[in-house]
Image (cartoon, rainbow, N blue to C red; front, side, top):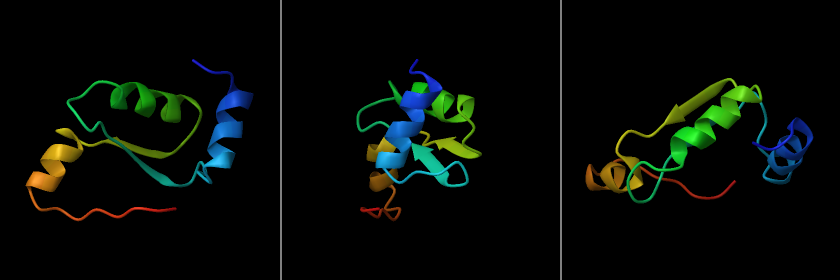
Length: 69
């Protein structure tokens, strides 16, 4: 687990704010997304979700995706 300062530094670089909605997902299976979601919650990000089934399932169901900031 990173320190609060290191976590905040990385979130600032990615322009992620505590008030943002954050969706964590894995591209293959369910491996690191729960840990990432835990860290976001631990450091105070309010709305954190784990995408059930990962990105592959989401796309197979024809659901929308976006990319970018």
